[in-house]
Length: 187
Image 1 (cartoon, rainbow, N blue to C red):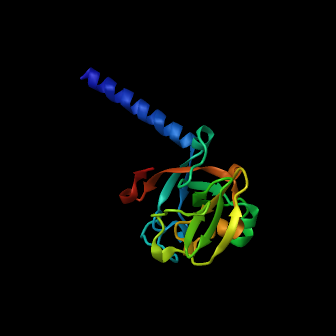
Image 2 (tube, rainbow, N blue to C red):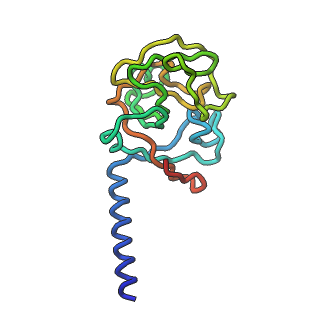
């Protein structure tokens, strides 16, 4: 019986330590708009929201100190000044979007599809009815900057309106959805 109690105490200490480490190296956010539907849900009755309860997510502040951002990462970031005006937001407000184009790549949008260095990007997370048909002319992403787009393109205020986001504005990638219970996942 003593061994079992010792083992449980050790397990609780390890789990508690991991929880503290995660909380010290991560930030908690809620999804306030339909810009990332249907990947991440916001709560009805807000326009375009599909869920009764909005998703709550955990973004790591540590990951991008260990590796470079990657295409497809869903990230928390501070909106650049141009985005503040384009999206009628607050300066430095945190948005959640997906990294779609990397530094040094050429990109454009045509017919609702993103083209990177002349090739159409496969984006299975963008539903056909959420594509935006407004064309964006080709441009090159500057060194150290990223194009961030919402998965619900027709309802997302993103890099198509304000331009690339500097790496220094990236807080970190989404690592988990922790609420509601039915949506808990590790990414």
